[in-house]
Image 1 (cartoon, helix red, strand yellow):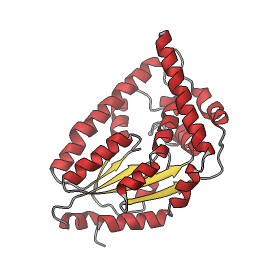
Image 2 (image 1 turned 90 degrees about the horizontal axis):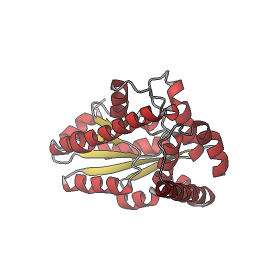
Image 3 (image 1 turned 45 degrees about the horizontal axis):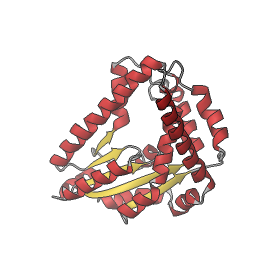
Image 4 (image 1 turned 30 degrees about the vertical axis):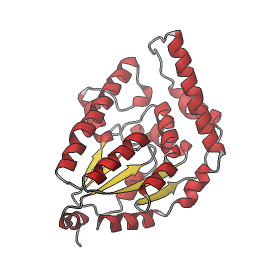
Length: 264
């Protein structure tokens, strides 16, 4: 069988980038595992983040971190982000290397900026968007550390919820921006739609303890931001937006077929 990476190398001057989008636990990796990607480079900020956490001696069970570990984890994530943005991806672009960017694409601004940079450099760009419901995302994250035997990370659930909100709102802008080079898959099931119940079950047990005291202004800003995010999420849970995503999505097998055709 001809490996896709060999086919890529035969297409001179037309490197390809596959950008993944989806909340933590959505199942992006599961779809990729069904493809023969050969030696195609995959850039996953989580891998770099986990390596840096291990080097710092910080537990990958981020949902239960104390203040010192939270600070160390934040520094590790910032360092991982810099390495990808300033080194790994720019080097790949400079060398016209085809690659997969395995992340959440939570930042619409950064994702579309990268898309423009890639296209300006002669790349063809495709997005695989994987949707999952909020509860599944939180449940997958909550269990990840234990299920992996301590080898994979479990993020703070508030971060997972915020990421889910951003990625879910980005669906239509990404669909429009990528056009025919866009495919989505939905991994869903029966899930809670009342945000208060979701917070009680998945966030409250892991509320950060011994946090640094905030000034009155910081507290006001924090409460306002939290309220805004919660209102946005509850609006999404009550809207037709989620059903529209599900109806617009295709099966895992169809997505794999479209990705394979793109990479040929």
